[in-house]
Length: 93
Image (cartoon, rainbow, N blue to C red; front, side, top):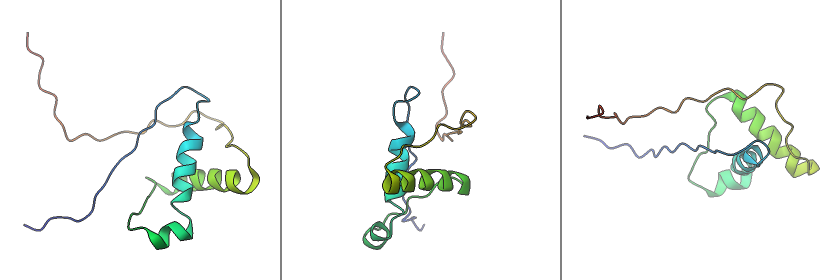
């Protein structure tokens, strides 16, 4: 049996509106897309889809180049499903 050398990790951020979740994620994601990070690190940080990539990277570039915080989205963010490989045992009485 051949083992995979790919390590996958998912990140979830919780907090009240205005607490800085978007700033935190955009800063982390954007910094990992910089050429110097990509050249010097073995890890790839990827978004679930191209729309998330674009939003997070544009937020990062806006903060980096113009010192402006991300705008609030026009509509509420869509819920993101988190897959689970654990099964919950039935409740016992």
